[in-house]
Image (cartoon, rainbow, N blue to C red):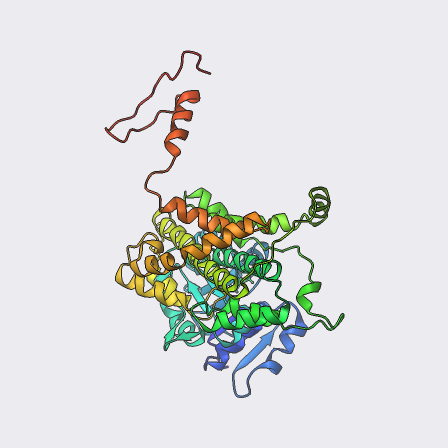
Amino acid sequence: MEKYNYGVVGLGVMGKNILYNIADNGFSVAGFDLDAEKANTLADGATPGTSVMGTAVLEAFVQSLELPRKIILMVPAGKPVDIVLTNLKPFLHQGDIVIDAGNSFFLDTERRIADYATLGLHFMGMGVSGGEKGARTGPSIMPGGDLEAFNKVKPMLEAISAKVNGEACTAYMGRSSAGNYVKMVHNGIEYAIMQLISEAYDLLRKGAKLNNDELYEVFRKWNEGEMNSFLIEITRDIFREKDTLSKAYLVDSILDKAGAKGTGKWTSEQGMEIGTSIPTIDIAVTSRILSAYKEERMVASELYGEKSVEAVTDKELFIEEVGEALYVSTLISYAQGLALLVNASEEYKFEIPLKDVVKIWRGGCIIRSVVLETFYQAYSKRPELTNILLDETIVDIVKSKLGSIRKTAAYAASNGIPSLGLQTALGYFDAYTTASLPVNLIQAQRDYFGAHTYQRIDREGIFHTSWDSCNL
Ligand code: 6PG
């Protein structure tokens, strides 16, 4: 019997789409799902002429694959991955490769790599971004870990991924669980950009009193220039979507409570864990948390009264400034996420190639944007760059738009328009670009009440002072 080249476990929308994508690229693929309905109808959705088979019997699925088996898991992160791995184990053969393509926590991946290695099995964590559509037509793929296993699946990954300038949006992201880590940070940046876009929307509707048709036009124009990106593009389209229930614009009927599955929170926790400042990502996570206090927010809004927003006089200028503020704060969010990757690479010995990260984020993924090309050029010149804000081209871009971010942040603050992301991006920028911060005072205070010692600017050594006779 002819054996299949690849296997996919989990035939939900993402699993099915990745499977069809692999098949469309000339590989034969078997799919497994416990749900017999999903397994039995799998072949119906495949492109005619491609080789696809579905089954709800795990052993039959595993036996249908050529050796070494190459199995991709498309199941929800957490317990389901462990269950599948346990169930697969008895049927696998030494040298088989199992790739988890979900949003798994990187430390879970490390545990699973070690567990599978005891049986001579290869386990890899691989980030996949692009949503349902991307999975079918070309996602950005972030594999990491076992190099030998990676090289066996590399041709397939290159074939199914998105392409930018003829280059595949996939590359080896580094050792161990680097693939999951890079995807986690991708999502952290995604949270920050989405937060910033929502704030720009709020500023435009409150400050410039733009309606949804006008917002559509603004985002359409933004998407045609330097802000061209997937998230700006879908935001444009959201403003045009009519509701089938109320016949009005759908966006106005959506409850303002944001959901979250956890990757943003992990990114934020990692920032704290390994000592990397990523405040715009942190604030994006906590803003979603705050949005869930809907009832409390309504009470508080009654107590403190409606905020009166002063309408802007020059709408065109305001729109331009909000656009520039969004552009530069988005850039600062990328800078924070990439800085986290630099530190994580060092901390966990991942050896993440930053140049390749920004290269494969140029297409297919949720945070794809034309600015990634500028980052790619920057890392190509200086792979050791610790923060993208230190690149000369970026310095010029940010300097040219600084006035707009300051004016927009000031307008938001003085009119009571929530702008946590924008203010934090600006605050991070100002702190990062300040040679002398006032934390000398914090050091003095720490030494005052806790004898925590301090260093001096004029000589080497560790110092302590008896600050006052009435010390605490
Ligand atoms: C992607 C997305 C994808 C998913 C997010 C949603 O890159 O394709 O990031 O992974 O849509 O995890 O995350 P939240 O539900 O936490 O917003």
